[in-house]
Length: 328
Image (cartoon, rainbow, N blue to C red; front, side, top):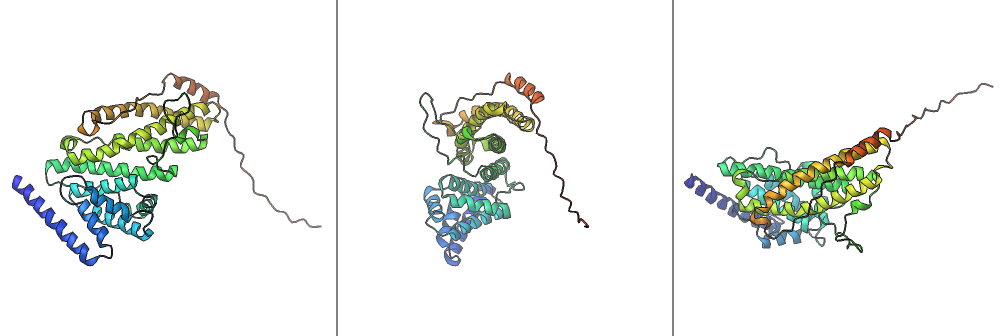
């Protein structure tokens, strides 16, 4: 097995070197192609910052939109062709880092590409070269699902939850709050389920088996963990807003709101378990975890009683106008 692993690493290094050489010769985007290959090579370590910086610059606002589209195409090609979990994971990390730190045009172009080409659809990806690779492949698929859901959440919210800057705390408050605190009922009922689905994908990102102790996977998991804080804050503030508006909702809206409230309670427990595992890992040594507050279950009875008595909105179908010809 050791000899096989050594051979695979040597073969991966040769492939990377060959791709870099071809990029220098054949591409109109040579610098970008080289940076992508080097950032996503077969070496089992996180992408190097100098290569990431070149990719961030190549997709910045001062660059033509065509450059951004080409970068996404090149990353998609890298993902589609590889059967190596390290290359796939590092490509996803590059995408994630660029989403978090890059220009919004990257996110917009990626969303457009995703709707056409499903760049993050890795449900069939597997590297079965070793038991460790098998465990790591499973996490690569889970990570891709999270990033896919992240884009879907942006499509619904029309803003990136991680890029949101929380306003300064008002007098007497210990923290700022998310924009979900100020949404109307219709917006809440649309945005909170999208945020809850994103959190569902996030808490599913716990590595299993040998993957749990892999340094590159822990590096990517740290990125996911960081995003949980604002997602939780947005959901929590949205639930507060939802409760404030609940007793003014018609019955059909109140039923949806009750399901969101129930799911918020369930997810508080799931997120708590996720944090407990993360706290035991090296990646979370300097993280400050939020205090999770589960919505009071006793309030559910009151909500259910209101739904039984809530006003129903009756819509009367409009009849088509029938034109008649009068004979005089």
